[in-house]
Length: 76
Image (tube, rainbow, N blue to C red; front, side):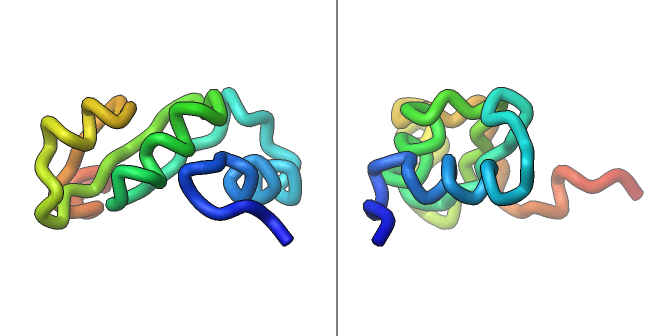
């Protein structure tokens, strides 16, 4: 099986299955270990979703962008 977080292996595998280069893929995560996995995997963008962990901690783990709700990323 695939290693769990904080290993980026699952994200890397998923990007490969989607035929998407890692540097063009986005990781959305609400866990510090998942954000770190995205950072360590070299993904193009790592979005931290703050569900109480704290934006500073998500940024510290490697999030390029932090949102509270994914609706913040959608244009009306």
